[in-house]
Image (cartoon, rainbow, N blue to C red; front, side, top):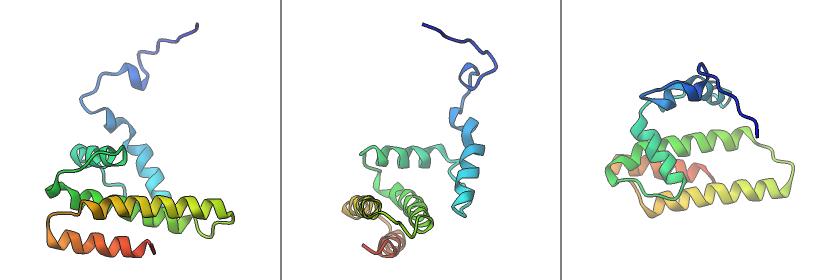
Length: 126
């Protein structure tokens, strides 16, 4: 077994906000999609991460989380077009339908957020 100790490495530095170390990486990746990275809010990021792992989001916090997820998915899907392989198209269709289905099964509590989420889901061309 081999291991390395690097007291200056990312994992060797204690941090109150470990996500803060990777914001610059996320900013660059989102920029490739033509989006401004704005998930500095740890609660919103945790809601999205939990939802993507199969958990639910509290009703009053669903709107912003769904908005970010669907907006990123729409941009990602648009950047991936046209897809040459049938299986890639099928995978993207499963991803968009699955996410939209989960979102619509537990809609946001506020009417204006529900309207926005419905428009984003509709834009996925389900």
